[in-house]
Length: 392
Image (cartoon, rainbow, N blue to C red; front, top):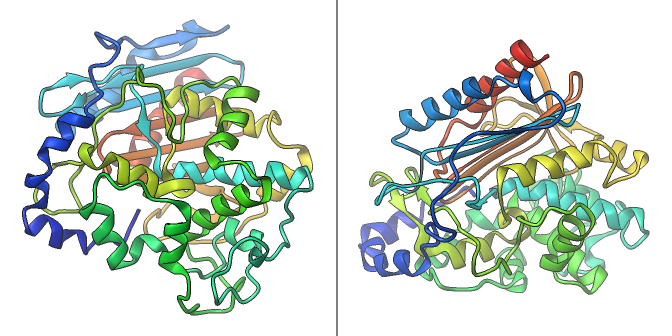
């Protein structure tokens, strides 16, 4: 999520040690019994899939990072699918990650949120040119539009870089943040450049889009997600809050925030997921994410004109995502090993994700992890090379 330096003060005071009891309270790794670990291949050309070599990529990547949990899925253009897992859902007890475990997808959530916004633009509920002051009062919005939020040209400072928010984000691990409280973090902040002038990635943009969606439709973000992903697309393992009591969730681990080695952040789940909201709070599985992204690019979600609008790119080099050259409306354009890819990456404390689509030949790959500092593009690139060399 970025901007987490203030959290070091909390760790330095021993807060992590004093909240250990919360980890066990929120541990859901053993739900569902013995995890299914074997790779699975389905579809018309299953025999062509280099399943064992894909699995070697995951196993090697997991082993190099001390059994980091990895869950991956690939969907080919002909409908053939592969999925695999490696590593641990619970690193301390060495409980294995399985195909049924859910993981948070971080900023891949932004692709879902942008898709929901564009769906309601298709329906005439919202317009790209609408000023956000129709729904949100920031005191200083200077004509910020829905489009500017979608492509990160609004210049609204990222609420996840606010030191006081970060102190509370980690300091109150059981807090359930409301969207109104999150908006209050950035309300009144000064803008540094004219909105629309340039791209600057900010989680606040997608916080505000979540609020716009809720207020324009009168429907909670959680339910809007369910109407699209579950009811229309039939993917029933993707949630923003409201996940069933039986859903297994991989524990969360981070190595960069507190600077004290690998830290278990599972006990902070309530604050982390509600604080991430429409910018990064979705919980899912690699196969679900792969199918939703594939559906998006194959016209099952947006009509042709709206999808073309989503793919209206602006220059957007990003020091945190060095393979990115452009950004659309909730859509990263990356180049990995010379291939043009479209989708999103994501990081939230304890988890990491990447989900990207390639057009010709067609494939969609998603990789989720329960450590927030994995080499997303490196793992993706290795799976992509096998796909191009051995399947196509």
